[in-house]
Image 1 (cartoon, rainbow, N blue to C red):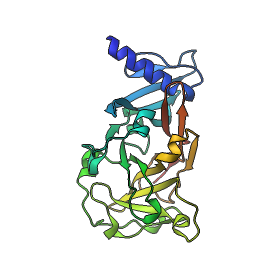
Image 2 (image 1 turned 90 degrees about the vertical axis):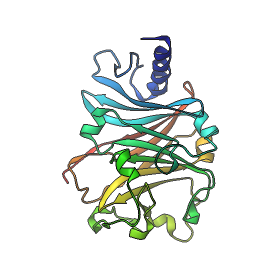
Image 3 (image 1 turned 180 degrees about the vertical axis):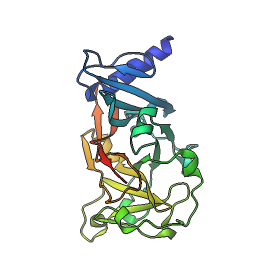
Length: 264
């Protein structure tokens, strides 16, 4: 292992140490937490954004995926790129998750979007990051073009969410289902929200959205991930999202966890 790879591992180990019972060390790929705990971390992909490395990973306990996440350096939060990236619809980072997550959970890859002026509806006009956790491949995302060919059945939309219709599809993304409570008069100002994506009749992404202002406060953020009555596939589905700041590594850990089995 060369010096650069060793440095990456030290940074990566420091970034996820807060999530582990004890520290992480090792080379690229699987990394055992040591002590016979049965807990290990598997690195996914890495991409440099704003001069810092964004990294995808999964944590396994006794070979079962318990967390799927992304290490997001504070440098990216503080100084996001001024120009769109090369990912779908200008994503500034696209990272596939480790194969262990692909084969056993709902998640396929992560896309990071920066919206300095927000986006419609007006409620989401504040500058914020969209953290897309997709269950379809990047190639499939790139092929999405409105309108949505098949609206989802009612039992595929979690209670309390609104599917706005096929014409609301966003190219290279899909249709966003929104929390009805956030669209009601008198709803508190937007700081963090969980949106859901749909395309072709099925849920295709989970999307935590968090304002830059909130993330710069470095306080823990937690959002529930709602479950539909019918997912459409047998897999393990996350029910919790957290964004935790690690002052030692100067990074956020964006984590999907609390997986539950979905029959279909």
